Length: 257
Ligand SMILES: C[S@@+](CC[C@H](N)C(=O)[O-])C[C@H]1O[C@@H](n2cnc3c(N)ncnc32)[C@H](O)[C@@H]1O
Image (cartoon, rainbow, N blue to C red):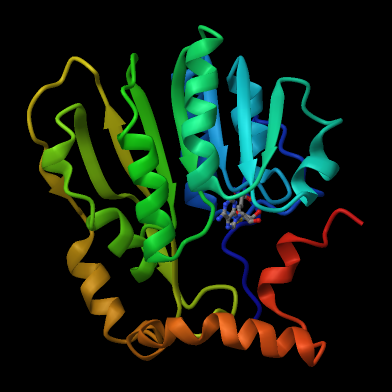
């Protein structure tokens, strides 16, 4: 049985069905509704790929900054979205620059999607780069794949007591999924939501409304064995490159051809 948890979905939002939007149906419905409600003046997207989520952010924001390590999204999408500026490079290095630029341009940042590198260290770095900045306006942050153990660990590892302006942290704002689209025993998807309010001045409790389900699923997942071996990934990638074997990661680099 072949399944795809992303399609079909039905909405007045005229999504481009030709591009791959790497979110589940529940996430797509939520994302459209949330952006439609927030109508952010300025937004940042970390991790763009083919522009699935960017088409929604672009439609409901005045201006958007897209950050991606790959040049492919910029080449593929530059002509499609007139209100998006594309920045190519490592997100944790580019986030502080873009935040300063937004302030220097007197723009009002109100929304961020974090959907780049999902490893614990990378999520931690992205989130710290965002939270360390002295935000002037309330900001809503969605972190995709909070149901993935590595990504979830990165979000949980932040010491939120250091950030009194954070006024809401929910790891399971939208639930994730298990072993979907033939990802053998893997856990992916889910939205975490973090909100920042410069007027808020005390520590916020981290909530995870689906934590019992998360724990149950985790013990049946491949992550128990796979994640501790994460340090081998760079060696595997080099070996695969040498042997000219295809890797999942290259899909983010070569789709613009
Ligand atoms: C899961 S895809 C994004 C999917 C997209 N948001 C959507 O909804 O269809 C992840 C993207 O993050 C980018 N990425 C991976 N590591 C990154 C990093 N360290 N800095 C910036 N972008 C990164 C990849 O090139 C890829 O385009």
